Image (cartoon, rainbow, N blue to C red):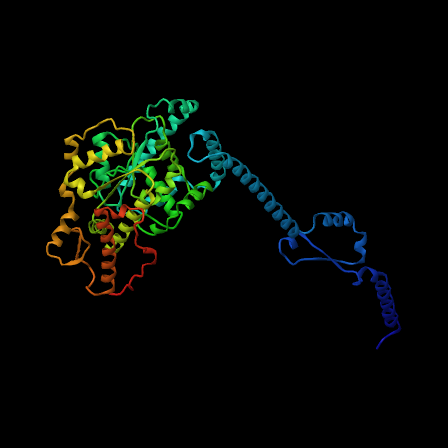
Length: 502
């Protein structure tokens, strides 16, 4: 039951509501809604502030629109910054390459007449490479870590670190003497003689024994530090640590090591890797400070079996051409020795390495003055054979004469120990009762050997094929045919090995 008062009250309320609605209608109109981004929206949130027509009069809107137009969105600015950075980096790289090309055009690699340009290029490259090079210690640990059997490397590297520290101190003290190098070069009394020679030969082929006799007997200089003697080489290796480490770095950059993929080594790529800073060349620099030292009056002896593979790379880094002493050993003895020392190397693997190392040693040294020897000749008459090698180096290859002219007998007695030639004795004992596999003529015969594979199996056939391949080269070394320029070496890259089935 509505009374008159109630009806008047309802009418008044309705009138007031309609009046209020009419007055506020422009304020809540949806005909002109925009979205204003907030800080949360920039950070990825979905919160927004909606505004109507009255926002046209909000304080500061003009400043906001101006800033928005000038700066654009964060995404656009990020893209612009990235593009600018790329363009700037590209311009800097092009300028650097242009400087490098201009310097390289002026220099002749390996010539002392352009020593200043070479030093400038070296300094420029060092600056570019510095930010890309890892720590030397990490590099060494990675290399040495792959030699589980070589505990002596730890001691050798410690000695090397000490020597490097002393050498760097001496370099700092002697920086002012660089201008006197050319004058001293002309007065060292050696004229055009070769400053030294490199011993080439496969691992386990007697290169350490031969090098020891030459160094201790005649006084050829190796520098150092050297790799320490070990159970598998009790008389010492006579290998510079820096050269070995640098060769390992050359190999590692091409996905290879001393015992695998050696056939694929590219000497030109190694030089490009060095020039472009793709490898650390600190060890190589130390080695070249010794090998290219024109202050020296003693002839150097450089020995590392990896040089059979890496020789072309080093020849372009040496100021003067070295002579070569090449030696070899029976392939089966080498393979047996490697198999005993390295658990992962089979006879077939060792024989294949024997072929590659000896093939590359002869191919890579073809244009150099060479003296040839054999492990058998050194063991049979060491004093006479090593004396012959020294005389031929001096008289034929024009190497600087060593300080001692005759081999002392006590040096021979200290180095030659027939009891250390275990694999030679074992091979000869086996051959006494073995049948002949192939007669290569001139008294060079390949006989059956003790194999871990069953006779007639694919593995046995592959092992035998590689052995006969190696024996053909060995016999051609014996008769001299392998030293001829037109000698045909086996094509191991395309050799079809039988499937690995037992």
